[in-house]
Length: 212
Ligand code: C5P
Image (tube, rainbow, N blue to C red):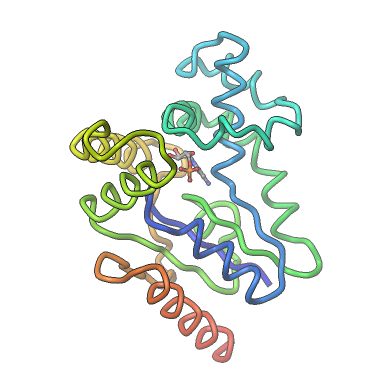
């Protein structure tokens, strides 16, 4: 069984996908982390994330890098979105994601192109989204909670700008742009808190699996 969970930045898809995998007792892969590792490796190697050759070279990052706390920062997220526009990089990461998806016990993968490119054959496809304002506010609250800065030190408007920029890059790239697969269930979590959003997803997944 393959479950594809796609959606824009800060939509909450990661939290939902991880909980869903636990709920179903199957494996989980955050594919964004792979792109973040490539972005981080480019920075470590002092390469240029916009240069396809530098970005491709960074796809050989050591596995330990996936444990690096730096991968979670906004700066690395920005680098990830820049390296991810190169078709060479997407190709280099394809097999790893496909092999994970095909493992015998089943898997949940979250990302931007799981339902469209990595696993068009997925049993269930979810596209989790929310308004720019809601996503920016959630990211801002998360940063304040993590102690990255106080409410006054982190301007919400800057986070909003960053979300808009990341969306534009993900939606407008030529190769594997962010979009819902035609057969994906679109779940808009703007008006819902985490718990309610998760309940909605679980219900939708069980319904889809029962129909299959
Ligand atoms: O999901 P996350 O914010 O960790 O992803 C970081 C960046 O990696 C995204 O903005 C996107 O550009 C890229 N990405 C991608 N395809 C995926 C997962 C992430 O292009 N499947």
